[in-house]
Amino acid sequence: MRRPWQSMARARKARSPSPLARTPLRVVELFNDRESYFLTFQQWARNLDHNREMVIARFGDFNYRRFRFYLWGAAYEFLSGSLDCYRMIIR
Image (cartoon, rainbow, N blue to C red):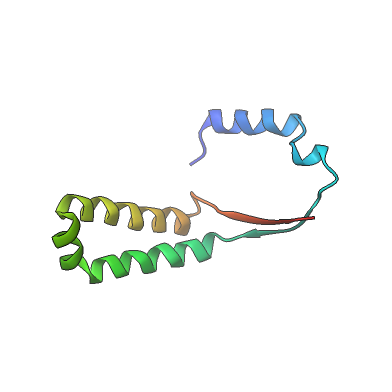
């Protein structure tokens, strides 16, 4: 869900030229890597779950749960479209 202040900040940024626009460089390609990031975070979370006992023994239950929450939460945000990650090729 977009919040009103995010839209206003984007509108302000759109009115002023970006630092890239003031250079001879141009965006040649733009990739949305959201799906790849979802798959990566999902696999990391599965690996963590698979190694639960070892992680708890080494880092404690609190850190295991905290990192598990982070990994599965990030995976969900990428899957739901709430979080994006772009890669640009600039020349």
